[in-house]
Length: 144
Ligand SMILES: [Zn+2]
Image (tube, rainbow, N blue to C red):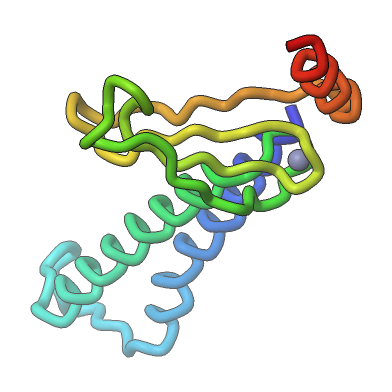
């Protein structure tokens, strides 16, 4: 819930800024009452195109930032590790990049190459007690 709330907050703030920017910029331009209601001029069209690019870039950055945040604590995911190999795909799997939360909340596995469309990254939540996972792995290695 916190994760989606943070995304909604970013979208609301970006929408307010992007909506207010053309309003704020148009206050400085002189009014033209004799002009037809919608008769765009070249500078107006260029400004609208620039605003569109700014809005699209802002939305892209919001989504990109949100994907690389921890689902639990909202901190940025760190320590990217490249795993897999195209040369040894049957042994190591396809190349992917894994990010982790530094507080042990989970791992994000992102495919390196998106062949069949945009694949959603795979989020794997870890248990709260990561010492339990470490001791379980040491017990398994001790049995062998
Ligand atoms: Zn976290």
